[in-house]
Length: 266
Image (cartoon, rainbow, N blue to C red; front, side, top):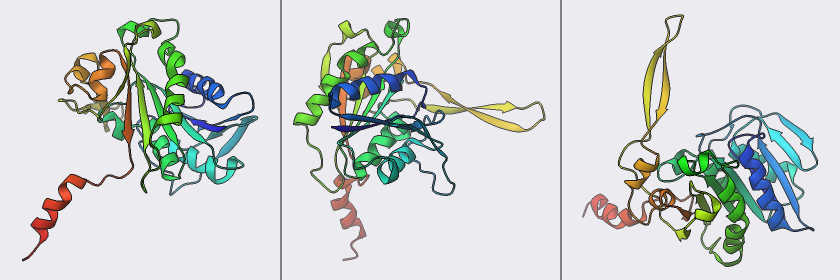
């Protein structure tokens, strides 16, 4: 098995090493693990690509490359030039922090998996929720390291994949607990939290110019607990590994019939 590993936290991120270990386990002794990751952190770039500027590529080691671009750029570069042929799996992560509810839309981790799926590859995004229970552990990624290969194996062996033009890819979030305290695995919806994730904080620079810092709030344990049961935000905050099936198709299919009626002049 050939596996492509990427992320949005950058080539030196600790979660990338966890994803590499998961990929090595999945690929087996005769498999190949290729790492193509951003040179620097690319959090919250979503599915952005570097359409109007070139990207520098550098090889660091055998099957290990950095790209001065976004996570989706890394997948495009890997499939378009770096890898000898298409991978059997694109593994994105393990992100430092959860990607649930509206975070899913912003996430570069999810964006890389989406790019893989759009190109016909099986793709999984992996994210590790951080909270009071695991933040002080020697390894805050303990639960993702312990369960990552097992969950990916189940998905590869049994889950639906390219059943439509826009194939399914999977968003996996590991809870903020020690591995021994994970309650189990749940198939979930993409949640919705009652409070907005981002705001702005005005700042005046020493030269008098005005800037904004983005603030990130309402997404901790308390904020996620406000999401509906059965959603990724709620179940991950309660100690479950969540697996959410996603597609790149943004069409609101449920609205099409009523939209057609509204647009009908008869």
